[in-house]
Every structure is written in C-alpha cells, then in structure tokens.
Length: 315
Image 1 (cartoon, helix red, strand yellow):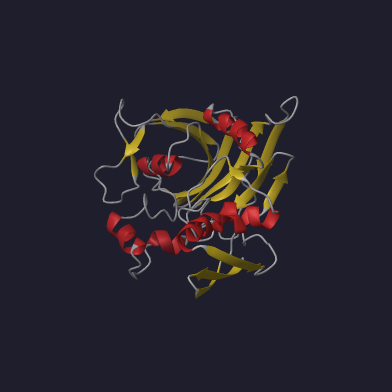
Image 2 (image 1 turned 90 degrees about the vertical axis):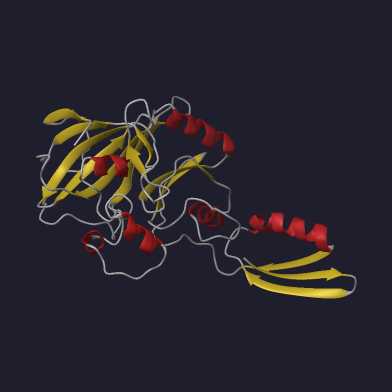
C-alpha cells in the first residue's frame, strides 16, 4: 500500500510519504506507537497495484481450511523484521485477501511446496502431522559425485547420522554430522534417479526435520548439492559472497546459480476433513532448477521399491 501520514501536534504538521508493498494491517503497530508519542494521526491509503503473486509463486491446491503454494528461491517464508524484504506469507495474504499461517518452512535458497493454514486451528492440526512425522516429504536434489560410492539408478539407501552445529566452521549457521549422543537424531532416505558423469539426481525423504538436514547429510557423504555455498564450497568463499565481495565463480556456481534442492512432493491425511482423506501434491520443477545432462527418460516415481537398499552412516 502507499500511505500518506499527516501527523499533528501542538500546531506543527509533519508530513511523511513512503511506499509499503504489504498488507495494511502490518503498519498497525507502527501507527499505535506513533499515536502514543505524537497524538493525532490522519491516514490516507491508496493501492499501489492490483494484488498479484510474485514470479515463481503459484497456488497448487486450495481447500476450505488450507492451501499449498510454491516458493521460489531467494524468497523468505515470512518477515524477519518490520518492512523487511518481500516474503511469501505477506504476498499470499495480500493477493488472496486473507491471513495465512505457514505449516512447514523451507530455507531461503530452497524452492518448492509450502503448506499454509487458512486459520490458526487448521495450521495447528496440520503442524501436528509434521511433528508426529505423519507427512511424507520428498525433495529432488542434484549433487556432485566422484563416483566413489558406486551409486547407480534405482539404488536406495538411508543416511542415519545425528546433526549438530559445526563448531569448527566460521559459518554461523552451518551444521555437521556429529558423534552418537551429540546433536539431534537425523534420518534421510535417498533414492537415486539417475547419474550423469559427475552429477547424481536423487529423491530425498527426510524422516526427521533438522535444519539443513538433506544438505548436511549429502555433504557428509561427499556428494554435496550443486550450488550449495555453505556445504559445497570453502568457508571463505561463502563469507566473501555473503559480504558482497565480487569474485570469480567457482565450478559449483558456474554449474548452477541456485541450490539444486526442490521440495517436490507432500503427502498426508487431511485432519481438517471428515474421514481424513489422503492428499498428494506435486510441484513442477522450476525453470532455473539445474537439469542433469544426458539423462533421458528417468522416472520421478519415488515409490518405496528399489533394486538395492543399505544404510550409510559414514562415507
């Protein structure tokens, strides 16, 4: 919205012109604070443009009490501070004209499906499904591989390794696999969909919900995800890029300008409807998602059947 505020106190007029592309309700706290310190506030608002979804944001499924949308890379799920950069929740609420409540979350650099409650109670019911691990989440990932693991199409394995903060890394948010009894239990199921020279295409199902779980687990096996600046590059390169320092693109970035991880599938029993019908939702691959070269006709069927299965705890 665009708001012009005329603030009046002791005969003095203060005029402020500023643009806000957000729901009008989000300026309520600022207005209350201004009224308490200044006095009378006159507000006039005009619509900047018709409500619309950001590029890459699509509504996939709408039900009476929830909906599923897609999030592109570099878009936050929600605001981190007042009037911060654009985010998914504000955009959906503005476009649809109603409040929405995020049930699951994705890293900023991950694209894909986000489940939103249309009321707080529905969000709570759906959130409990995630808490009880009753939601099947499937991510598509493309990684680098040296071939040392000998993985091929149809291979199916489980990474069972606890995750904790990487106390030796200068990157504050980085996680790492830690010893038994330390960190939090983390289990990721992986199915290989295709291999193309130095690239491997996988469907990953996290059985637990740890921060950076898939990224950390795959890097632990020395098959880091394409475009991963935290787990696939040297720490100094990540820090320099995060600080805005210009530098030549590494092979990781030359291969993909974005992270090769996409939240592709959600499956759950709907607790908001009688009989709890099963819901399965898929998200098409974004145009900017790195594609494996030379893999023709590989299947995105992420069923439980596989040609081989094993447990991988260490590289």
